[in-house]
Length: 299
Image (cartoon, rainbow, N blue to C red; front, side, top):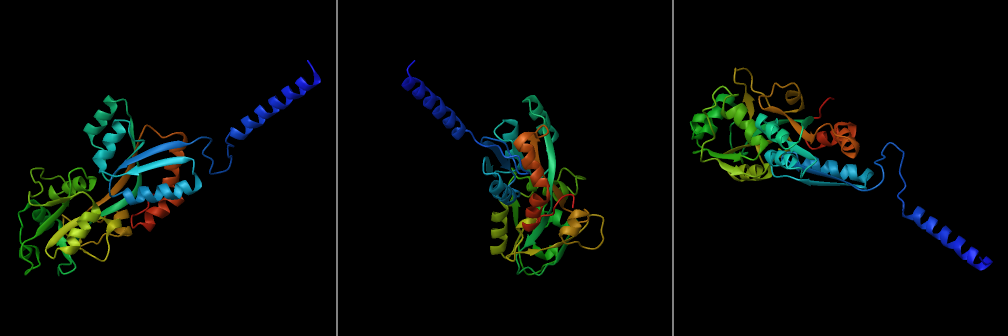
């Protein structure tokens, strides 16, 4: 082989080696390392949790740009169905997963594992023009079943007929409110929402409608409350002083409609999914929970 051909072959080999090095992605070994290559996490479900999921995504992506996190709502039931159909890695849910959903998941080869990622109180809201400041759980239940239809019977004479505003049946908040309020904490399952309740697909829609309707009553996650509505204190089913929803009463469970918010995965998360879930439950993720008006877990 001539000297020229040997030189050309050497140069070609070196060029190929350099190209290979240039095309490889360096792997970080620091505390925020996610490994090489892009990863995708689909997070679907609770509209109550949607602002949390969106904020978690943006904050996590600022440190881990190689991880693609797709977030959408639709309701807790929608998220659990997506997990079962393997179109989501995380199901956001503002209620416990139901036994029949666990059975459906197991039949599809899914092993649902739920992790509490925040605490919440379902706030009962009225229009600011409503003079009422508190309501008992029994009266609230009678209002939502349609047994009480006029504000005069609920302690606010002069407002006329009560306009019920509710979440829709795909919502975990709808189910929690039905369990804790409508059915009197499960003691009377014959009780149901009155048919005249206006069902809304989001917390924002409930908030807007109650804020614009003088005789309306509704309920939203604590993180959604603003000055457009008034929050009512609730007297527990067994009697006693009325309680407002706040960090202390939600954390200790004295507020009658306190609950946990969950992220459910297929089995214990591993790899990138585990790092994301650990981050959500860690100091940075829980600081976002607090910033958005919900209550952190484990702090």
